[in-house]
Length: 79
Image (cartoon, rainbow, N blue to C red; front, side, top):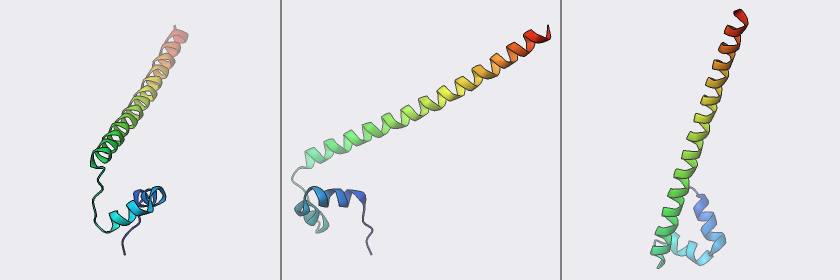
């Protein structure tokens, strides 16, 4: 049994004929547009990953700042 992918559902909902052709192995004549869409999705995926890394870095820097502040205040009170 073949798994149903989200892209298959999207293709079917957008154009049943395109879905039928795809299921029967016929290539779309819009290869340039499909390639451009694939490139757009890859670029978006890289931006999402980059944003996640920046967020993690921000959290780590915030934690480091809190540790340093705690150490500074503790040291100041012991004087």
